[in-house]
Image 1 (cartoon, rainbow, N blue to C red):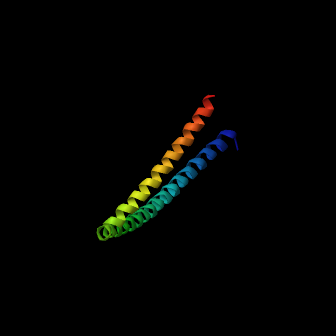
Image 2 (cartoon, helix red, strand yellow; image 1 turned 45 degrees about the vertical axis):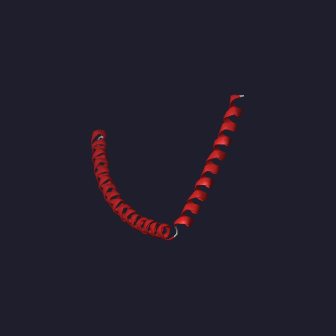
Image 3 (cartoon, rainbow, N blue to C red; image 1 turned 120 degrees about the vertical axis):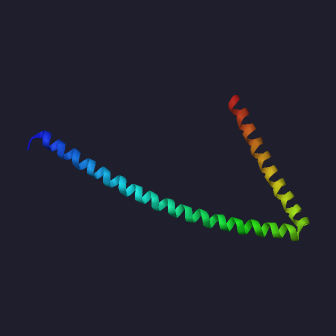
Length: 96
């Protein structure tokens, strides 16, 4: 067999394989998309249920809800202030 024929057969085989790989990849991508959408819908339903429960709790216990919110806000504020202080301290060390 001459070299040109071997190369031509190789190219043809590669093109054929690429087509098969593209087809399989598309099918798998479609499957993954369907699975992801199902999981997203499940999580969305769970979040709606949780939000409804939180809303009901707030309506039944407004003072407790305010106290909990204030506590969470204070904790987050302290954490952010701590991180900011550390970042500022590290920034000053790098400048020296």
